[in-house]
Image (cartoon, rainbow, N blue to C red):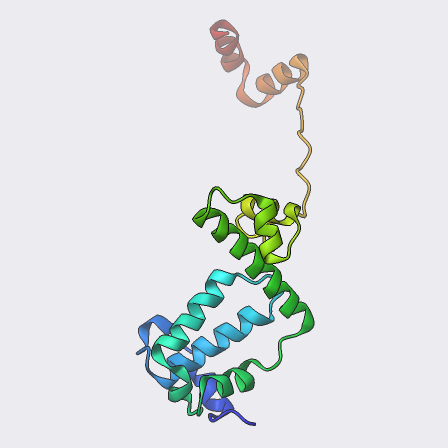
Length: 177
């Protein structure tokens, strides 16, 4: 099945900020679907953004603006079959998000009970509750630079001050110190 809009129309829709367009327009719908596609294709999936994009698609019925018969048809054509890595990543992030929400909604529920209900280990539940987004929580790749300690030879420093600033300035500095 092909998209019900041309490549040229898709390229034109990508120009300009989406927020300045009418949410029910074809261009806005194209930008939303493309944004959703980029989010789903990436390895680092932010579930909140995906849910927001799905809500926008549902709220403004973008499949109608694009000429699809149904939302399911639009999703199949626009997003295709998610890669195995993307599916696993999405499942992992959504389960972690579910664990966070379950703990927030039921503070008396233990990690073991949440893990049993979601099919996760207790360690993953504990990690999910501590981190903001377990997929994006990574250690920085670049090491911290070493601390440099600079030592100056007083006799060379005094000689440099005399040479550059003059004998009179050096005498005033010596008196001030």
